[in-house]
Structures are given as structure tokens and as C-alpha cells.
Image (tube, rainbow, N blue to C red):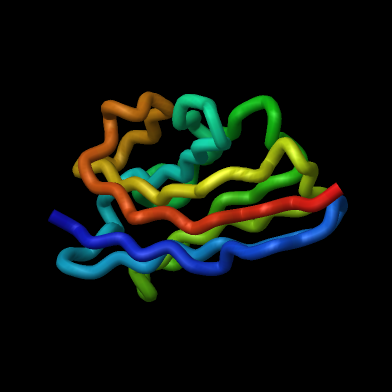
Length: 124
């Protein structure tokens, strides 16, 4: 089992930017697809972005396309989510997740390991 720790969340104004990090330990994630999910208050957890094990493929939810970018540095065992042009609707707890397989998936149940989450709050 891999341990995931998210960081980088915080309070930002509308239009601002944040960069979330997800540091993995316990095993290398170089062969693991990674995903970012979020849960807004009163809502179900939803897929935000994913990246394949090699980093060669990425996939985004429609509501973040053009604003968020997922990336990874396998040498650091870390995945990032750059979030630009933030909106109040982006307010949520953001979770990092890892799969045992390298293929990218958007389904929550495809992921085996989860971090504790980091709060992102966007003020209007």
C-alpha cells in the first residue's frame, strides 16, 4: 500500500491560483496512474484529473479543462495539480489517489490508495 500526502491547499480569491502536491511513500508510483478527486460540501466526491504512469496521457473533467494541469515527477514520487482561474465552485477537499496499474482511469473505484485530502477554498 502506498501512502499519499497532499499539500498546497488554502484560501484564495476568485481568479487566483494554487498548486497542490501529492507526495507518495511506501513504494514507487512510477508505474501507477494517479488521480485527483474532490468533494465539495454536500456533494459526492468527483473526478478532477488523472495522469498515466508514464505521464504521457492525461484526462480532465470538463469543468476544469483549460484551467487545471496535472503533472508528475516520478523521480520525486510526486504528483501535482496546478489550478488556475479558480472559481468559488472549485471550493472542496481535494484528494490524491493511486492505482496499482499504469492505465489512466476516471472511476473512483479504480483507485486503491487515497490521501487524507487538502482543503481548497475560493472566495468570491
